[in-house]
Every structure is written in structure tokens, then in C-alpha cells.
Length: 157
Image 1: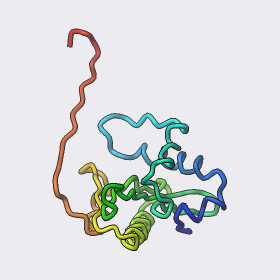
Image 2 (image 1 turned 45 degrees about the vertical axis):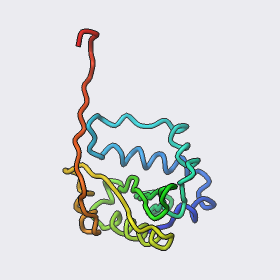
Image 3 (image 1 turned 30 degrees about the vertical axis):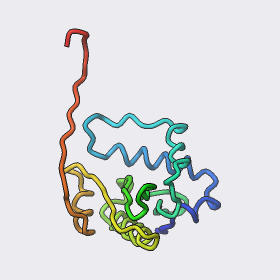
Image 4 (image 1 turned 60 degrees about the horizontal axis):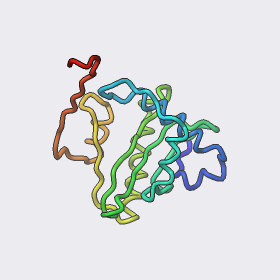
């Protein structure tokens, strides 16, 4: 298994956006969410790469052969470059429980530190296994919140 920042994969995989989108969609299907995951259209997904805070050195992929099997992302805050937020970290089901996500996160955090990041923020659903990994890596809870939604099925509700 190879681990690389996106910046070093762009030339190797001309279809990297398509590969990243497919992996992201696959991983998001297993993220505990209040509503079932419905996916993001490709044209919408790729707009993430036009974001001024996007840094391809803070997007890491694990690759086996030519297959993207895991990823982690960080986005540095434009208003405060010493702060960053995590995006999705995940591993394809058949590759889980081998320490891949942990290695990805460690490498990404080290790269962020080299870029001057001092604070990294994340969020997790309490039943998500990623919560225990984040705690192992030193993340500390600082607040909690609940999400509520209501499906409106009729005008009289």
C-alpha cells in the first residue's frame, strides 16, 4: 500500500478527480448521518477543488496498485491559517482495521504542522469508529451538539 498526497498523484492519475469522487461517495455511505446518504453529483463534487482553501498536499490517498482505497483531508482556514478542519477520513470496507486510516491521519497532521497549523478541528457522530481514532490521536472534545430534522409531508403540519 502506497500513501501519497494528491499533489504527487495528479500526473500519475489523469482521472484523479473521478477516482476521488467515487471513493468519497463509497466512504460516505458508511458515515453515520441523520438522513441516508444520497450522493453528490460529480460536477458539484469537483467544485471542492476550486475552493481557495484547497491544498492538494493536505489530501492524502492510500493506493493499492491503481486502486484508491482510503483517504483523509484537511482544509486550512483562510481567515486563520493556524487552524484546519478535517474532511472525510475513511477506508474501503475490505481494507479496514489495518491501520491505514490512522497512518493517513498521522501523515496529514504532520504535513499540516509543517505548514504552520496549530489547531485541527473535527466532528464525529458518537457511534462512529473514527471517534476513537481521533481520541487516540489526541483530539479532545470541546462541545457537543444534536441535530434535528422534520420531514414535512403535508401543508397542514
